[in-house]
Length: 284
Image 1 (tube, rainbow, N blue to C red):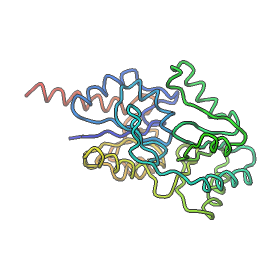
Image 2: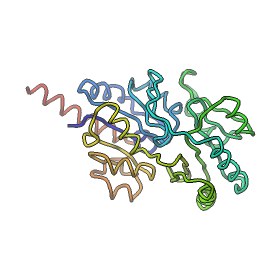
Image 3: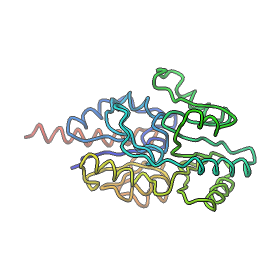
Image 4: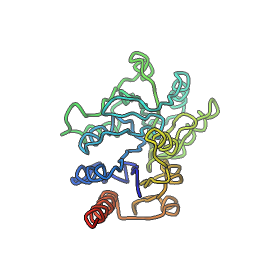
């Protein structure tokens, strides 16, 4: 029996408009009634999913920044953190400035803000998506040309750097140049998004830590993902499932391929599963 559900958000649980199914809270409540935990594992900072967290009535942890920061948003308890050092963030920022052709957008993720040096396309999209969101749950964004000074002033820790550009070769070049200075993890999390996180970080390690925290076997998990930053967690899953819009290499490694993310296929799968549990319970 499933004990824990873990899902990626963008491209998996959310549709392309960054929306959840209107039925999400109801289905998740049913899962919780059967003792099944529903967890988010995302490349985003957890402050960028707290509107969904609230709307779905969640009370467990969020595995954020590809696993480098795990926090219970209801209580504020930090379960795990693996931040970059100040020196490492400085190196990443320096390489970005040296190598960018102007097309690269750089975001630095902390528990309190997403930092960027201008109003980027991605920041504009966040603001557009959250236009009707309660101010309490909107994503805090700090826009300053001197990002490092802003981080220092706020005494913030940084857990992920995201670069975005259609020039994939340039994103990979910046990463390789950073890697010459210190070891870290890097991968594409979406078509034009490249994530850099501290060494040893992955969603898989995040799931293992959360499973241990809740005393749940990882074998009793069902995990949903669609992109390269989901590979490791899909490998450790008891059951690995992806939507039909997932990358081909993801489809090949999953136990099951379901419908498109725009049809809220993950939620539909969970609804069918929990309804069957209800039927079994009623038969008894």
